[in-house]
Length: 300
Image (cartoon, rainbow, N blue to C red; front, side, top):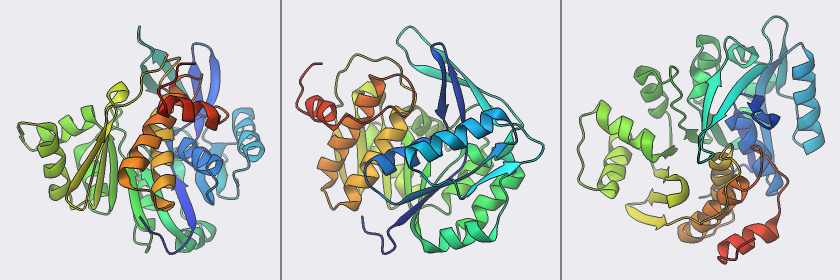
């Protein structure tokens, strides 16, 4: 994957994940931006926080992480977003997302338009489009010349088919998980006999240039230019899965922009997502040695 402009823009929710172990900064677009920054890319996050202590703490966290907060607005009325994370017996996460919150009211500013015009890659998710204000802002930015990458997050009740499919009409690259792929197949009464046929149908139906489907601890599959690459994933001791998919996406993007093969990019992405699953919260400090150990099948 090549982008002529080296800047990357992520847009959407920033929030506090309230885990059983305590609160951690989160939100898929922010997580992806933080991981991309850790991997050495020039990335910005556009979002909104409340005029409250939780918002000030999030901005301080971003600043301390080295990610610019120039495009993080402050809402005068709506609070900073909070999400309650519930873990099952296998430490897999489900989410209780409060509303309305500041990132539901993300408005189009001259600075945001300018950054979008300067960016070669625009990363956004489906969740941030649950509210008409933020949704309109995202759709207006999708008319830029950047490569457009959507991270599907079908979080009930914010999984309205008409909104998600409209977003997909503007998209070049799609990342989703296997359960979400099944939902799309159900929407269209598709009963493909195997996984690859289902992925190929999805790519053709939505005119996507690249589709990546994550499968939890079973790895991922990537479809691009009519060819499939898959990886079985890496076995690790999971602490929680919060942010693993975001780390996976950032690692995949970074690897593809470096010119790595799709096979090598997918392997690195799986290892990075696995590493984050061994840590608490969505954006732990990177340990490239541990990621390398995971790729080599070494226990730790």
